[in-house]
Amino acid sequence: MTPDTGGVPKLATGIPGFDEISLGGLPLRRATVLAGQAGSGKTVFAAHFLAEGVRRGQPGVFVSLEEPAADLRANMGTLGWDVSAWEAAGDFAYVDASPLARDDDATPSYNFDTLSAQIGHAVDATGADRLVLDSLNTVLAFEQNPAIARQRLRGLISALRAMGLTILLTVETPGDPGTTLSRYGLEEFVADGVVLLRHIHEGVVRRRSIEVLKMRGALHRKGDYGFTVVPRQGIVVLPQPVIEDQEPDAPPRIPTGNRGLDGMTKGGWFADSTVLVMGPPGSGKTLLSSEFLSAGAAAGERTMLFGYEESAGQLVRNACAWGVDLQRHRDADLLRIVARYPEIASLDDHLVEMMELVQEYRPTRIAIDSLTSLQRIGSPASYRRFLTGLTAFVKNSGIATMMTLNSSTLLGGATSSEGEVATMSDGMVLLRYAEVSGRVERALTLLKLRGTGHDLDVRRYEITDDGLVLGDSLHV
View: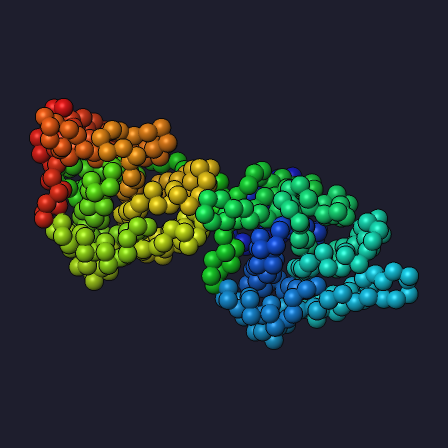
């Protein structure tokens, strides 16, 4: 339990990221509605809330109004939670509360008295602190009169709060939960808090997001935050990224992996810098990334390559043709290559995976090849959120990062949309083709490098068996 600056104590959910945006968790011993369309993740969120409670020594009760116990145990098992073991230990109870109609009225209605008795028995048996009712739509559908439905539900919630429970109620909405929460007015008449889950189609994939709509008497962060479901972990919410204060002293320089670039940068990149390499296809972006990682691995550092255009085998073979032996570094466990097809997940999913793998392996250098492949799967807004979150993460972790991006022109520079990416980077290398005296030359420009002077010349370069070789200045 953590106190809130708004005066209402809260129960920490333990769900990564959610306690940050809710400023402490769910209101303690109060009821919160979790609303969303089908497939938005309501049951997973609710199960995670109970699973974290068991882990923290706070038993829970799952009241299912739709899903059989066997299905619930199996589904929670895929997330790494052993419900049967918790039940055997007395830390978890499942209540099958599928609709129980009574016929003493002209119109059958749900038997809330029986439901309250079932829950009371499970709470007494477990000493529960947390309770989930999933989903209220099933029982409320029995009530034709919204006023009666609110009255009976209010009575149930009052009885549950009297048991000292922190309650999470799920509600399925026909549309956007922000506009069509419930025809019974749960958010206004019954619940102390409302959390909305969305499952929106963005680009070629769907993006999950969460919003704390209200918490009566308590503060919370406003806005929409991405979340994902991680196998054997559960819900992970992405809070607003913030770059932490850095020490004023300049970090050490590290070699770029390319002798010519080391000279142009007057000693290499800074150890915590993010560098964008931009150019048309075939200009050598992946080559510079391979040289960057190889330099770190050769010095005994752990490095990681995230590839979104080619398989790990292709990346290794291509680098070998340039004289860069990535396989040797992989064999020495100084390089890990993570190759993914972008369309398999949302940008939030990819970001969460990157963060988890980096935190597990702890590399000092990473490369992402390429942002172009990730850009195409989401909306402009989700892509900006992804870049902001990624930049904040690598900055706060002190990881030297190189990202590649396809430019939209062969002979020109950056467009306005590409410039948005460049503003988040500490350094920017532009590769392009230039027409000189009827001949097409490859040209490299170091457009920027924050915090230090650098070579401003446009230089010729060649791609050889020994890598990318810079030449003299090019006069167009």
